[in-house]
Amino acid sequence: MLNKVLLIGNLTADPVVRYLPSGTPVCEFGLAYNRRFKSGEEWKEESHFFDVKAYGRLAESLSERLSKGYTVVLEGRLTQDRWVGQDGKNYSKVRIIAEAVRIIKKPRLEEEVEEEEITGMEVPKDIDEELKRLDEVKPEEEKPFKEGDDEVPF
Image (cartoon, rainbow, N blue to C red; front, side):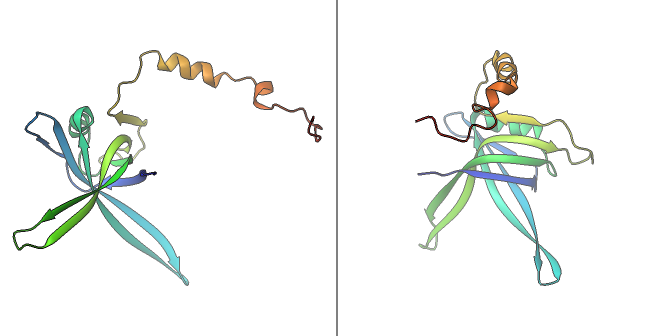
């Protein structure tokens, strides 16, 4: 089964960090997404709001680097919390568990900033060298067939 969410939106408030009894940090924040669409001859806009949670090092990093108004790309998964209220009724809420967040724009600067990705995973130090090597693909290697090769060789 696939459970993947990819959103671009703005933080609706500063992230709030709490700690589980085990000491694991949990960061919570809201993300707003605006959808613009045409209905007949008129343009309309609707806003959608999502609750987001992050855990561990990602939670600490987000709480230090993000604030209300930041525009981010969020990658994560959906989860559903269920509970019984004091009135005895069953309740549920769907939220996003963040796995990676990339900052696109800071709120007080109207110019785009260099993208910065925040993930909960450690990145190997030699990853830059590996990416450079992959970027240096020769044009001949990109095309496995020569121009004019229309026939399948079997």
